[in-house]
Structure formats: C-alpha cells, structure tokens
Length: 336
Image (cartoon, rainbow, N blue to C red; front, top):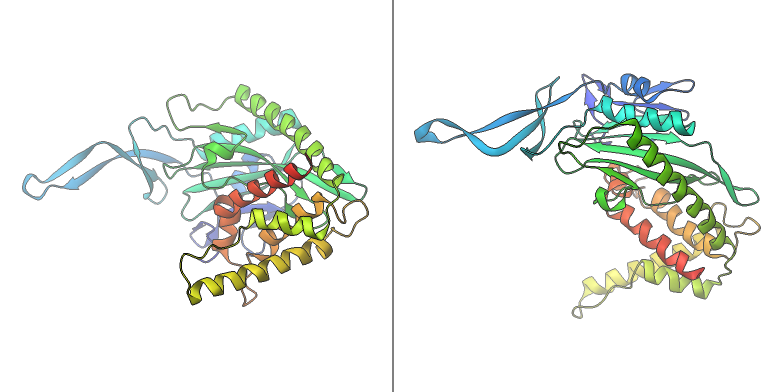
C-alpha cells in the first residue's frame, strides 16, 4: 500500500472533488458537498471505542494493564493506538460536524476527505471563498485543513493552508509532526473534547485573522527586491551547508549534493512556475516559492519518476512541513 491511503474491503477511504489525485484512488464526487456527505462518500462512517488491555501473566493468567486502553476501530477490531484513561475519542462524524459548522459560517465547501494507514489519521480540506492576488495574475486560494488522529498521538487540528493557483504550491506548512504547535486551532482528546459550534466559530475567527496576515505578508514579499546573491544567502539559511565532522568521502558526497541542490533552487528562483510574472521575478516572493515548488513538486518525485507516498506524507505531516515554516520565516525576515 505505497500510497498510505486507508483501504477497506478493497475500497480506498478517500473522496475528492475536482481532479483525480496522483494515486488515482478514491471516490470522485460532483457538486458542493457537506463534510458529513464527504465522510460518507469516503467510507469514514466507522467509529472508534476504548477497550481494556490485557497481558499474559503466565502464572496468574491474563491480567489487565492498569491505566491504559486501546483505541479500537470497531468495524474491523483494529487497534489504532494505546492511550491513558484520560483519553476521550473524537469520532469522524464529530470532526465533520465541526467542519460543517466552519463551512456554514464561512461559506466554505469540502473538497477532500480521507484516512491514512488503517485509519490512525483522518483529514478534510475545505476551500474558503476568499481568494486574493499577491500581484496581478498571481492568485492564491485559501483552504482549511482539518485533521484528527485516533493513534493516541494527535488531537483535532485546524489550519489555514493557502495554495498558489499558478503552480499549485501549498504555501504554508501543513501540520508537521507536532500538530499542537503548528495548528491554528487544536483540540485535545480529553473529557472536554466536545466539538461545538462555538469552537468552530472561534476557529473560523482565528483562521480569518491568519488569512489577513498571510495576504499582507505575501504582498510584502512581492514588494521586496532580491538578486541572485541574496537568494543564495536565503537558500543557505533554509538548507544549511553540511558541516564536516571529519574528512571523509561521505562528507564530500553530502557537500556535492548540497551544492547541486542550491543550483536547482536558484534555477527555480529564476524560472520556476509563476516566478517570471511581472511583480514576482526577482523578489522575496519568488525565492520563497522556489522552496515551496521544490518541496511540493520536486522532492516527492523519485528518480524513477514515481511519486513517493512517504515523501508526500513528510510534506504534509513530517519534517518537510516544518521546513516550509522555516522557509516562510526566513522570507518574511527579508521583507523586514
């Protein structure tokens, strides 16, 4: 299962509107969909529940493990995570209620819903109708990413996720490895984990504020001139030069790889998708988009030409999501 999408009885647990995803899996839907509809079309109506854990004490027989429970997917009796007694599950339908509340308040509509692995993590992506242009002809479409975990490691997280239309770059980090630190809104799995309309309204307010800040930040980047030398300095801060721990061939190979990577980034800065538009070329906006294009469209593709599911997951939920956050911070520093 190289794509990492959850599969149930031969059916991929993902539904989408619009273009077919790179993995070619899932159910395509037409028209505007509610989150509840997308949950159903993606096959995510299953629930989880907490069950006791036991171990074989041999002499004394089977005994319970005190203080811990298993999070079990009920339709297949699959254990998704091990948690403490304080843990309170957030069901897929509860997450859909929050997304539908966001959609009602913000006129958003859900375009993707799916699950990874065997259901340990689920997500939805909804478009907010507040598109804007950074410069003339360079549009950005804002989305809300809602993700939640059943693995005992992740709560429910909502985050603004803008996408640059001209190249389909995801302009901000997704959620990275520490959702609680990167999300705009985060709900933990505890006894107060009830998801209400008020929580959705608070989330929408925070996301709208973040959207305003994001729009102004991107426009500030486009207003900041940057020459190739400045771009090289920026790339060196985002992707630091390897340090030699000792003189060996391994270091020489790493250094050669780093130099080649820097060369490709400069090329993207100068000729990347959308970076030759008037008002974009030779700016901090172009140098930042060189990183996002490399992360979204170059890094995930293996030498064989196939898309790596592991690398895609790293861009969304791993170290390369964290990289985008650092890249944006460095770019905004250029704009002062």
